[in-house]
Length: 133
Image 1 (tube, rainbow, N blue to C red):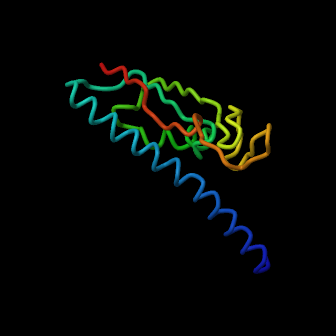
Image 2 (cartoon, rainbow, N blue to C red):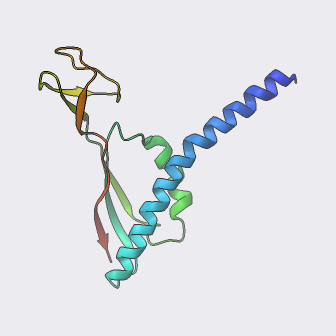
């Protein structure tokens, strides 16, 4: 195997690692919050968790689902049913006040082509509800 092959393999593995590290930290934060809430409620575990993760939040849902089981094993979230609502990205143009859907943070206004906008939804990362037993 040549050095260029090894380089590309290492580059791929490092990109894969970086992709999962972000979602890993998000799940760790969710777990910490859930543990705190279970303790406050004098509960034992979470049976259901409802999350809101916007489509332009930067979270890859497939990566989150991949790291979830490993992160929550033997915790209050281990057997929790997870429901994720993913609001679309929406923005309001700062030039012409048009409200429009965006798929990427750098999308421009479809009406006047201005890049200047206020993002009004889609970047959410929230725990909406925990069902604690």
